[in-house]
Image (tube, rainbow, N blue to C red):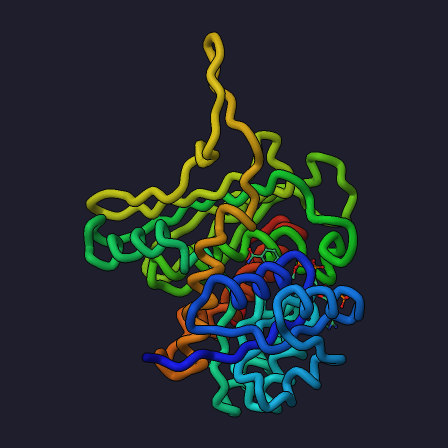
Amino acid sequence: MPRTASLGVVGLGRMGRLYAEIVSRSVEGARLVAVFSRTRSRCEEVARELGARCVSSAEEMMRDPEVEGVIVATPSYTHAEMIELAADYGKHVLVEKPIDVDIDRAKRAVSRAERSGIKLLVGYMRRFHSSYRRAKELVDEGRIGIPYAYIGVSKDPEPPPPGWLRDPRLSGGLLLDLASHDFDLARWFLGREPIEVYARGGDFHGAGFGDADSAIATIAFEGGAFATVIASRRSPYGYDVRCEIHGTEGAVFVGSRHSYEVSIGGWGRVEYVGIEWFQKRFLEAYTEEVRHFARLVTGVEEKPLVSGRDALKALCVAAAARESMERGAAVRVAC
Ligand SMILES: NC(=O)c1ccc[n+]([C@@H]2O[C@H](COP(=O)([O-])OP(=O)(O)OC[C@H]3O[C@@H](n4cnc5c(N)ncnc54)[C@H](OP(=O)(O)O)[C@@H]3O)[C@@H](O)[C@H]2O)c1
């Protein structure tokens, strides 16, 4: 019987709260020991509800001898700093995507984690969803021949809530915050490294966050493979996340526009009811990701499915895409 991983969660917003619940309620190999959020009342409320301790700083969490692994769900611009802190105290980390918004900071954090010997898993959770895992198996079994193209669609039903997520300097903007899921998947499915990106975008809905609300990026990969990713903060018909992997002998398709559980039919039309955003669509993936993290922490598994180096690559593609969008020219992926 494998032992249980004792975990802590830092940051208790949309994702942190979900992780805390998953750890305490849905993963048999994990238990929630401690939580931290700077808003004390929230920290205490979550701790009380889930039977954990509310600690008074991220550092206190990292120092806590009972905590073996930490899930970091703080804003994206704090991730590198949190990874370094975890490395200082020898705690394994599951950090939400992106790895950070700054390439130099992210590189330092990944090197620091590697030197310290902690396991670093980054939350590109789509890789954990059963549909994506099955697609990856099919591609790796050679069922579509040699894969040469990835097409990804990532459209959110509404812009992120007010606050840091709307500031592209803090969130990394549309291309890092949202499209980097596809940059990671394209590399994973194609099994090749990205070389160059060309991206275009615009603020079509006039949100005025100082960023494109919709964009398209085309990426050239080693060996002549390529990917096209369309991302949007505002999908009038709801959450839409799909991808296709094309190969010399066929193609694999993941996801469907018709992913809603309830639909209503009338004369000549069918309507899909409700919005299935990421918390619901990818609940299974977050749960599998935490299960994997618990196994890494207890030593049942050694290799993170999404490493710090993988996430660094996604960050570099997003940075090149952003520069391309600003300059209107193709940009080499520099790291
Ligand atoms: N994989 C996915 O599908 C997915 C989906 C959504 C978001 N995310 C990622 O998850 C991360 C969190 O996003 P979110 O939407 O959950 O954000 P959020 O709702 O704003 O939550 C962030 C939390 O972090 C806390 N916090 C802020 N600064 C902190 C600090 N320096 N130290 C400790 N806690 C701090 C905030 O509360 P206090 O102010 O009280 O500290 C808040 O509870 C982001 O990196 C985002 O990109 C991933």
